[in-house]
Image (cartoon, rainbow, N blue to C red; front, side, top):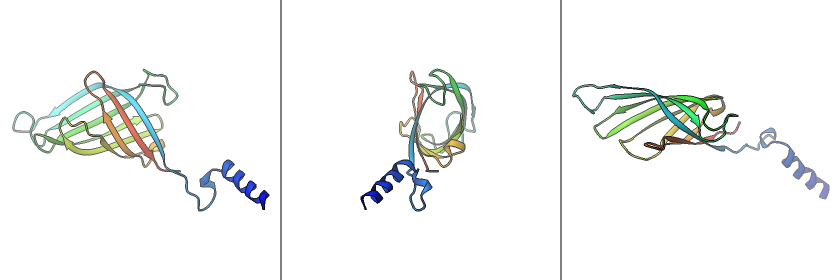
Length: 155
């Protein structure tokens, strides 16, 4: 009996959980920190002039590692981002975007108040980020650091 428990313990230590029927892998959490550098921006300003419902702000960004990630050193460009912010009123908006990184993409989309520091919902991803959920916190001003806190489904 003692040998059977020892063999079972060793099996759980050596064999990945997903390889045993009926035992699920746990989701994993990943945090990615990237410096965002604006490449281009544009505004589709619909009447009336100035910020109003229906105006769309577009942006393209280059993303640099803040720390060593993706097998690349800090300060190195590792991806790009395309985003849009559509005003739903003078003080609220819908924001959406796609981040291209080594191994896949991250998609985000959320509604909120202009100028809010609330996190933006990550809604999906592809490749290494397939099925990702979580949040994006956007830094601004002198600290344009974007922090993605992702939950990735087990594979």
